[in-house]
Length: 412
Image (tube, rainbow, N blue to C red; front, side):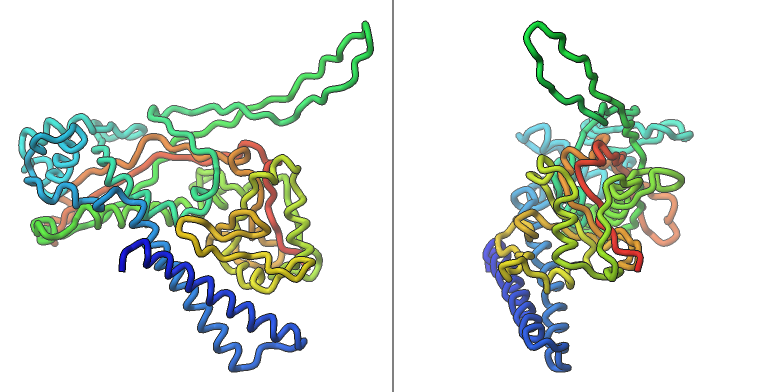
């Protein structure tokens, strides 16, 4: 089956299962009863199938987002360790990078070593003289991004991504209050009311991941080592980024400021909603922010909140959560894009479990340069393994805390 056809089939089957789960739920609610043991068993089975299909569909979408032919297919026909004959500078750098990955700096060809120098990046803020690594080729970067972004909720939203390359502190001007216009009568003087401005500073914190690959795999020309490294680094940085962008404290060991940190716009569910919420709560969260921010509003919710959403309907008895059957499009909640994350606090009394608003105006992700990688052959020589260390530099800051609201469970 073609990848696109497979993706459509998975998305459609996922939607069908969710509809069946909703039917089971609605039947029990209409009879004012709990699920029977048989219904509960069927409901739970379909719920597990939905999770499995969501993961499979996401993998298919990841593969679709890769450069044509995948990470290493473009270079497989070229001689590893040699310059790409007749190719572009990007092709030459890609071949040189693979030579470095497979053979290390000492054993790669002199020509490729010269080409690779163009991608050398010094590691700033370090006490190790000359520490640095090589920028990864564009298709490798795309593969890492494809493995990372689907698992990082805030990167899937319209959050403002600011790309830099210098590593210095980045002051970002923000507006904290706006003066209002007023009437002016003939020959009178307009009042001078200044807007109130401030700034936030985005840093360039370093996140690092180390992974090992055996000499045997590196020497096996049939093994797609570049794809392995791209997947490993992508998943590792996703596990780091998602909780940081959601609930990073901005202090201590958690340098990034998450979207829920120091929240000033909070909607709290009505009493009795310590682990669940109602349609009224949902409307309250939606209207908590100003209309101009609702226009481009997006939802980011705790994964476990989906089980509550499944049973909610609007005043016309229509489901408010719509599962997407179209590849590349997210689910929708009240007509707005819906993303989920497992990295909010566990749903409990007073826990923060969701976000809604305009993240393009409210939150910024600062990305300083791309992923860089360095290989070392000495550390695990006794186990015949090479070490690949990859790092990225980034930060997350709140631009306008009124542009989105944080959703909170009730205390009792």
